[in-house]
Amino acid sequence: MSFASSESLVEYGSRRVIITITAIFCALLEIVDTTIVNVALKNMSGNLGATISEISWVITAYAIGNVIVMPMTSWLSQQFGRRNYFAASIIIFTVFSFLCGSATSVEQIIIYRLLQGMGGGALLVTSQTIITESYPPEDRAKATAIYGLGVIVGPTLGPPLGGYIVDNFSWPFIFYINIPIGIIAAILTIQFVRSPKYAEKTKAADVDWIGIFLLTISVGSLQYVLERGQEDDWFSNSTILILSIIAGFGLFFFIWRESTFRNPIVVFKVLKNKNLRIGVILSFVLGFGLYGSTYVIPLYTQQILGWTALQSGQLMIPAALATAFMMPLVGNMIKKGISQKYLLATGMMLFFCFCFSGYLILTPDTGRDAFFGMLLLRGVGLALLFIPITAVSLSTLKGQEIGQGASFTGLMRQLGGSFGIAIINTCMSIKNAEHRSNLVSHISTDNLNSMQRIKQTQNAFIVKGMNPDVALRSSYKILDFNVAKQSSVLSYMDVFLLLGLMFLIFVPIILIFLKSNKQQDPVDLSSAH
Image (cartoon, rainbow, N blue to C red; front, side):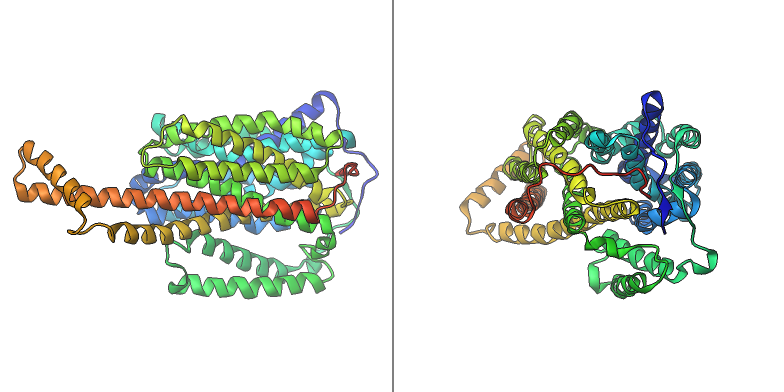
């Protein structure tokens, strides 16, 4: 798996601008599509004659396609040439975007989303390498900041964009919007993107087909369990139990296979690098917080506050702008020698403050203005996390190791998001039941306040013309609704607190165990992937 790197891939002038824009749009396409369908599920289920549970598979299938391909991206780039593989991935993504929009049954769209996800799996990791290698070593932090805009802002753009399209057009256009961008990106990739000169490819007879099979079934099964576990009641469901066993044994044998086979598709020995190991862990935590918060905030505003999907999505825009503003500044800080150690610790602390603010402000009727400050903290915190994590992960890798390392960090960020959403859903379900039980225990005929409230509500209904029995039943229904709403709010508060504590724990860990290296060697990506 070696290749030559005699030719520099650094670009200048308009050519570098074109390559950067092409790669960032490809990264945005891939990430936006992870969240854009969330707001269209109801419309899709009605149009395709499917239940919400069935149509939610369009999210699960896409995520499975992503995580299967991500670890193999470096190897596939070597086999086909990075430019060819990147262009082919864009074309696959674009073609199956069209087929998703044209699907006439739920089975069709699930299959098309799986294949669209496999096409998109390469876009994130390869976009990162293409952008970064186009800049000279002294500007690599700036390149990371540019790439980070897509990764951090992308999940935020999905819900408002999807809400606008669904409200003003129809759900197929959330897929059709990818087509013109994909066509232009593919043409520009073929015209401008260059590949490193690979010394050799793996012959068909030497391809690790067993490794590919083990990777597919293990990572695919794990992603299914994380996506569907809470809805299917986890291990009480036989499918979840069987797939969990397959994922566990599959990952074990996959790691063993790749550690012993002469031509592995995923090179685990690169994880011997201490900085990469730290970066992989931090990428997981970043994905947990990024995707977890992107999931839970719109869910709270729609479920509790009754906002539309578009309103919920628009709420996240100021945080995205804060991230976009901070990214270049953080890149310059690293370039000037400010230690990534302290930037990471500050980012973790700000993300904790964002979560703790959420814990404090959530009520059954929190106003829009209350979110501004906390989401600003989120935006700045994510900017302070993403660039230093990338710099720490790749700073001491060389040559082909960089592409392999980028694949690991990209995969762990994605899996962090999947674990985060799964744990958030489970936590909310458990906490909601606990809070409801606790609240109901305080409502009885012996509780004077409860009885007075029910009586007041009953009298209000009687004044409006209801008979006393119907008015009393309606009063109890309203009380039950309020209890359910309050218990949900309390469970959201718990989620924010737990999420914040996880980030707070990492502050001393980073300060103690991460070496302060103000003069990091430039990340040489001129021959990655």
